[in-house]
Length: 272
Image (tube, rainbow, N blue to C red; front, side, top):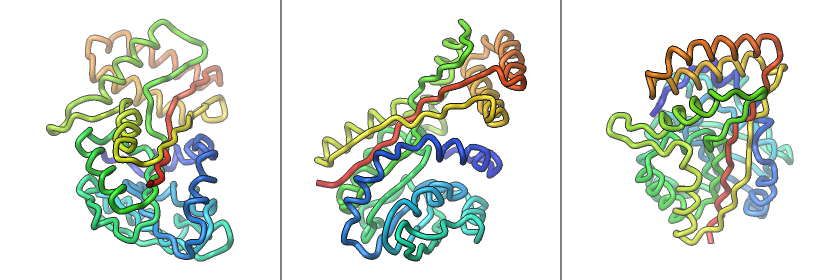
């Protein structure tokens, strides 16, 4: 699985919070109704930003179990200043961490879990890993909330004819084979939706786009650099024009003249 720097995760946290599909939260509350003690597993938790956003929107005593393969991120997520403070109704929220490979989770590992949640995770999975995780969640009878999965659609303003080439190359990079694993990339939500539906669960999806303007110039520049860099890594022949393109776009960004809409999708699964 990809390893992310805490600085990048912290930089994107506000944009993530603004993008998440809030219309999916009320169905989660409905599922949790009548349950005094809620167990939530955050898969690939990073610095714990999903918990900080979601815990205060859900009622009841909550026990968050944060999963990640990176021990440094788990240490950061467990820090007192990084933990969610309280639930929607003021109930206590406790946090523990568990270092493990989330692609190995099975139904028995999720016993007693109320909600499985994740942010920006699905595109890093393979189809086989996605199927195993979905089967584990459905067998365990827990709800699922996967947020901010990339969809592969980017709109920059002002537009440029080179945008499409960079976008296509980036999406191909997201679907790459790495260490023998064929990543789902922007196909992840479609695959997950189909798998959960075949397993008999009720599935909803909603758009959760980043909308970046002049007031998010630092984040936009960091995202833009990674976006173009991945595209040129996938298609090295783009590099000469890609370098010029990136310099031009970064100059626009620094001048407050660039707007970007980076599409993501959120997925909510409720067991039958």
